[in-house]
Image (tube, rainbow, N blue to C red; front, side, top):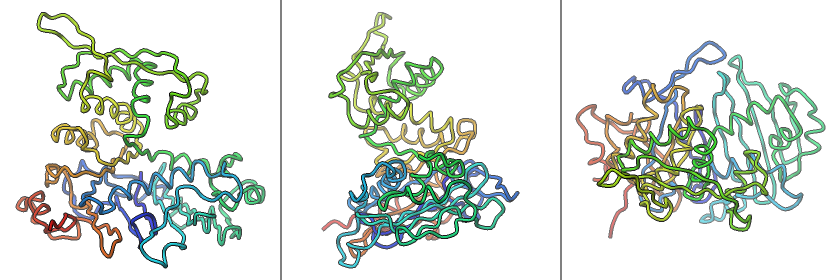
Length: 413
């Protein structure tokens, strides 16, 4: 589970900002957090969700992009060409001192009871620093210690061919990314743990993933159908069929997704979906899903596969603009699935950005689950509702937020 992530000098973010999913002391809404037993025997309470509010252009979407950029660099930097720079690094441009300073990312997470802290700093030219600590017995053990691009610390806890991995790591590549490609068993664990962070956007292959799941697995198809029926959208069933498509017509996102799933480009298929409705006389009428269903229905279908997969496997789903094309009650239902121990049995987490304020109430979220973004001197600042005094069962959070009590709203001229 993700405990915290931090970012410095990225897009609209200048100073270090940290989003925490560690529960504060209050025990309200006990289904909204998961108690983890650490390898030390101690326990830790971790939140199952976090929501981020803020005015337009406040930088809340950039927090989501932070994770996306970090994950892409971790996953792909081993393949970067030497001296071709580091992709996805975008420093804060509205202060001269930030433009040439490194961007820094850090993750604090727990996997199989062991806490890990991993991070790196980079310019658009090269990786500057990289670090990884594990805490199997409470005290930190150093797995990666990289300084000034190519200077290495002892890295005493790391087993395997450290020298070969170090020599193989290019200036613009991460040691973690490189060593895992060279079969480091010690680092494969943390790499897999980081891979449990899943970003989902309108550009990601959610439709393809949902179709793939429904087409390959009857049980998954039934789960997706039940998920859709919950929304009361009138669909009785759906049929997914595969047809060969020219590679040129397949998006890069789908290509990457397909290859990652072990499906070669020559085997990529285009999915066709027909939704089935019942007419007035009881007969079944088929719709061309992509042409005849509403945007909301299509988006719900696109969400269904990844949503159910995340809940089933205990992943962390990170989303921008969750409210797009969804009714507020449906959105509330989707969020509630992460707060239902009968559904969320493996500590799955949801981090999302929204403008939908009807969710902002004390029955849905704890104070420590609600975050706000606003600009200060052109730079994004992130802060928690837990920083404010809120009277339990008395204060209307939605009204208080919209009236400006917590900030993070537009000041219209």
